[in-house]
Length: 327
Image (tube, rainbow, N blue to C red):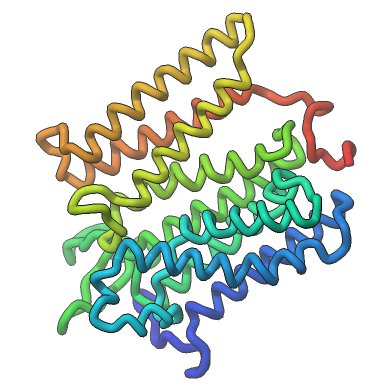
C-alpha cells in the first residue's frame, strides 16, 4: 500500500478520473437530497451539475496550467492530459462560483442557499478525489530520512525517484482527512449552528483555506509566483482575512462582547500582516526550516479559525437557518 500497484483500475480506467467521478457523484447525491428537503425546484442540482462539473474541471485545469506553464511549454497538447493529474481546487472553486452566479441569475434562485447546499458535498468529493493523487504519485510532501519514525503508510508514501524509492510525507492523505472533517462539521453546523444563508459556504472557505495554508508548506510541487510565493498560501491568507472581516462587520454593536470581537479582529489583522511578511520576505533567520514554517502557519490557521468562531458567536436553536424544524 505504500506505493500503488497501478494507475489503472483493472488496467482500463485511470484511478485518478474514477475517484474524481465518485466524489462528484456523492456530492450530487447529497446536494440533491438537501435541495429536496429545502424545497428547491425538482432537478435543480442535476441541471446545475451538467454545467458545474465540466466547467469546474476546466477552471481547475486552466488555473494549474497558468501557474505551471513551463511544464507544458514544450508540449502544449499535454494540457489536455488531465488523467495524468494537474487540477487545482482553487481554480475549480473560482470557476464553480462564476457558474453558480450565472445559473442562479437565470433561474431566479438564491445564490447563497444553493452554495450552502453544495459545499458539504464538495468537501466530501475533495476527500475522495485526493486519493487520486496517491495513484498518480503526486501532491506528496518533503523527503524523509530512511530512519524517520514517520516512514510508514499512510503518514508517508513511497515515491520512485530515479532508481531508488524514497519516503515522502503523504500530504494528499492529510488533506483528504482534513476535507472529510470539514464535511462532518458543515453537516452538523448546517442543522445546529449557522443562522444565515451563506454561512455554510463561508465556514467551508475558512476551514479549507486554513488547512491548505499549512499543508501547502509541506508539499514539494506547490504552484509558485516567482521563487518564493506559493499561490495557494497567498490565496488562503486573503480568504481567511476577508471572511474574518465579514464576521467582524456583522458583530459591530455596543457591548463588551462586541468590543472583545473587535479586539479579536484587530489581532487577526495584525497577525495576518506578520505572517505575510514572514512567508514572503523570509523575516526569521531559521524561516527556511520546514518545521518552523509549518508550526507558524499552523498556529496562524488555528487562531484564524478560533477568531472566526468568536466573531460569529453562539446561535440559539431558533436562529438556525437550516434547522430541520425550521424548514
